[in-house]
Structures are given as C-alpha cells and as structure tokens.
Image (cartoon, rainbow over all chains, first blue to last red; front, side):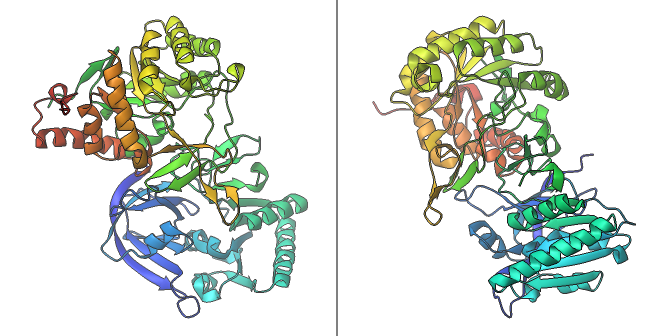
Length: 261
Length: 305
C-alpha cells in the first residue's frame, strides 16, 4: 500500500488564533484524517477546496502541524488570495488533500536539539515536539513580529524549554540575530542538532551561522508550488551540487550545507 | 462504451493522455491512481544532455491559468531510458517520449536513441525552442523548419510513430499543421502554451525570472479549440487536442471538433488524481449525451452552412 494519497476530506474546525490583537489573520484548521499509514514532522500536505472554481487553479501547501487518529491540523497565516480563501472555510466544507508529502526533520532522541522558528515557521514544530520521545532534550526559539498569541507558542512552551524574541523595531533584529548566533554556537559546542523553519532571510542566517560555527542544521523551505509531487518543477532550489532540486520531493527539509539559499 | 482509440500508429485504451511537463515521468503520480488506467503518458521533455532549466521564479498563478518558464529541466534522455522507463508499466499504457532539441540534427540524434526502446510507444516533437542558428526564431513559428525537424526525427525514429506538437504562437496554425504533415508526421498534438507575461507593480519586476513564459490552463481553452478545429481541417493526419482541459466536457469538446485523443496538462495540478478520474468521467458523459460511440462522436460538429 502506498504511503501517499489524494482524498476529499471534511473540514472539522476552523479556529481563529490570536484574535485579540491581530484579528482575522491566523487560523488553526482541523481536517478529518485521510487514510494515511502515518506521517512525520516536517512533511506537508497540498489542500484545494473542492468548491473552488477554475479562477484559482493551484492547491496550497501547508506543513502538517499535528495529527491524531481522527484529525489533521494545519496552522495558517493569511498572506494572499489562496490562504484568505482557505481561512474562510467552514466546518463541513470539503477539501481535496494530498500527502503526506516530502521528507521530514531528523529525529535524534538523545541529541540536544534546537528548534529555530521564524514566525509562522513554528507550525511544523508542534508535531515535532509532540512526537519526540525526549522533549527534555529540545529547546524552542521563536523569533516573531506579531503578538505572541498569534502563534501556538504557549502550547509548545508547556512541553519544552522555550524562548522567544519579538521584532518590533529595527534594533530588535540585531538582538535576534545575536541570540541566534549564540544559541547556534552553544549547540555546535554540544554537538547538537539544529532545525529551522521560517522566512528565507531567517534560513540564510541559520545556514551562515551553522557553516561558520560548525553546527549541524536542517532548514525547511517553503517555495511556491503548483503540484507538490515533483512534476511541475516550479519549486526548485539549488542543492549542494548546484543542481535544481524540487523542494516538494527532495525537501522541504535540507541539511543547511546541502542547499543554496 | 468502447473507449479504445487507434490513430497515427498509436493504440490507446482510452483517449486520455497526460501532457508533457505536467506529469513528470509518470511515476510521480503512481501513488494517486493506476497508471495503466490512462490512455497514454507523455513524459517530461527530454534532451540529449541533462538540463538545469531556467532560474527561479518559474511559475505564477494567473486568472484561470498559470505561467511557466521551466526551461526543459530534465536529467537527459539516457537517464530516462535507464532509470525511469524500466519502472513504468509500458506494456499496459502508451509511453510517449517528448523530444526537445535546438537543431534538426540533434532532434534526429534523440530520435535515434529512443527508436530502439521497446517501452516507448511514440515520439512527440517539441518544436518551440528558439533556434539560435536561424537568428532566434522558434522552430515552431517557421513552417519550413517544422517540416525539416519532422523529417529529421522521422528518418531516425525507426518504427516509432512521430507526433509533432505545435505552438499556437503563429499567424496561421493550418500552415504549420501542413508543414508537419508534409515532413512525415504521423499525428499532431496542439496546442503548446501561449506566450505570456506577468509583472509585479509593487516590486516593479517580472513575476517570472525568464520574463516571457508559457500560459496554460482553462484560460487558453478557446484558443486551443480553435487551433484544433483549424488543424483538423487542414491535414489528413490525426490530431490530439491539448489546452485547458479541466473536466470531461472540455475533453469531449476537443473530440467533437475532431481530435482523436486529448492531453491533460495543467489540470493535473488541480489534484494529482485528476487524469485517472477523467477517464471514467468521459465515458459516463458520452453515454449521458447519447453518443453511440467515441468514433461516432468524433468530429461530428455541425457547422453553419
């Protein structure tokens, strides 16, 4: 039996997140669990509501944030037309879902593991923390621009050592970068594992510090995708050998020294 | 209903083929359906040597369509023949190799490599490469070049049928169709993408690194239908309809104007099981509209006198 499938599933719940200070931008969406054999943190799904007409053709990729026997949870931020329409889904609506797609984050239970999240990049780390056999070996660092209650930070901070820094003024960015460098150095010294997910400039910073400080780091990329299955070749990035590799099938997780950013 | 179609040296169990560049080498879609259910699979464009393709960004979503400028990124024909083809169920589904080259000799060489491959049912020739030697004009826009490339491929193709894929970016599609037929093509497929562009007024940049890109999807279906209609009337060889097919009704529209089969492209991105589902939907719809057979329905368009 194949590990991947495309199924029409029902939307169970669309719950706004962080509505107090930032209304109508972040949502947690729970979908009925497709008939999967399993999934791994770092993998993603493509979603296209079956009600969509042909004006917008592509499905949209989202990290799997969490899953149990009944449901699959994604965490979304409205950034454009597609995410706006997905955010306006209601319980009972039907969506086509294909996945679980792509590779996954390294899991080394006994290794000190640093999770570096840039904003919405925290999404896949929920599943990572929930599935990890030794959460006491994990530290989460979230760099964010919007109020903390927009992100599932509290949920994670109950399980693992967590820190966060907000970027409100230009000088905050320097503090965040300094903190990232310090933490990457610390984990390099401990022969730890670093996993990062966030916007491209954030990932470049992680890649540069990991190279400079000799740390082992993985970065999860989120390029624009049409198919999610490796066919359209629209999401490629250059790998360590300088060849174009599909982010959807060769990634989305890459060792930071095996990808050009 | 009997869904078999035989045309231009190909024998398909139904008229649904997947279009080059939208279905990988087919294996990418195996988790989502039985590849043997399809009439045919046209694989990603193959060149003699591996190609890295164009820089990013390469794709953009547009109203009822999308733009792409991938640049024929592919691992080369040798890789396809040794690594992908043996894994494909080629005994049960027609595998059509799509050829891409930048001069007639190179096209011939590619055809030569593939002519001995038992698993390849036919060759589809992509004539849209801008030919540097001829001053940058695309092969596909010059009838004389279309004929020359077709001849060159045909000469080296052995017993493999040759399908020539035409570009819509021409003044008269009928002239191009005749050129391919004169060059010895066994069938035609059309249309390839329409030349297009998208820009971002905030960043003041093109949305595609290559600037010019190919438009596909439902937006181009009326253009495609018109081109197929004109091509069918211009030549005696069979025609395969391509362009914006996103439901069974779209597919039957092409068959109504005279196409023997269709290729599904961008709709494979709507959901990866799209083409597999389309096979059943076409059969059901044919029955629903009272067609006696696929053959009876084909080309039965009644035109005003």
